[in-house]
Image (cartoon, rainbow, N blue to C red; front, side):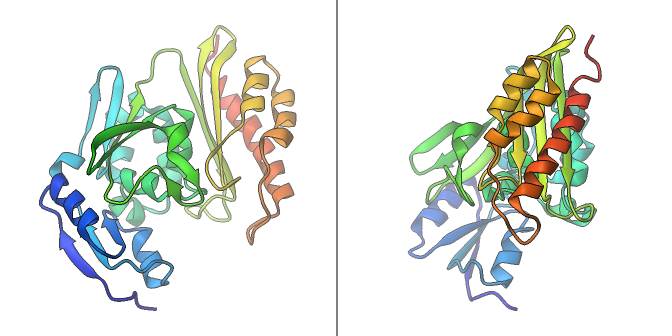
Length: 282
């Protein structure tokens, strides 16, 4: 199938991109890696009147540490993040998740910002940034603003991004010696979207964990925090944490699996991730 007709414009700068997005009378979309967008266009699930290509906007690229946070530009490719020594050392949860995102060809083109902005509920990175209590920087006609990850995902493919907005970067607290992370997912084949997955972070406190954050994906319209399971895991009981999933999650049936199967798999993943979180506790 071919996409519906659309106009194309290449942004010369971030301000130019915002101007193009806000000025179109129809629906405009940002083109970065295009790994999700082009598929939706070809299937005519989306029919924008204008694509605004931001690939030439250099200020949206790069990985850097500033003020105790790791800043990842929206145009950083998955493959670049996967190879980054800084990501491996300072954002280990991203390093755990990257090999699960699609296949090498997809990771070579797909962008960090695109994955967060598209907000697929079965995608890995939205859950990771939620588990890490990160923030998203957005630029628009009213200037720049930062939105906490917990406030960014509004619903199925719905986010805090408004008409004319561009996601410019994400910021994540840099890991410390006490940081612990865990990641696991179930998919029918490696590289497929997950039936259900779990991204987690915590702080080691002797042989216990504190500040536990569990973000499930593929289990709702957005990444879902398992808050009762978090409290149970912090208290030291994995069994109680697994039991709490029954209250934390209410996944719907879909073509991949029933809600009951997803909830069961979430419990299996929680046991695996809990073991990862406790690997180096002492």
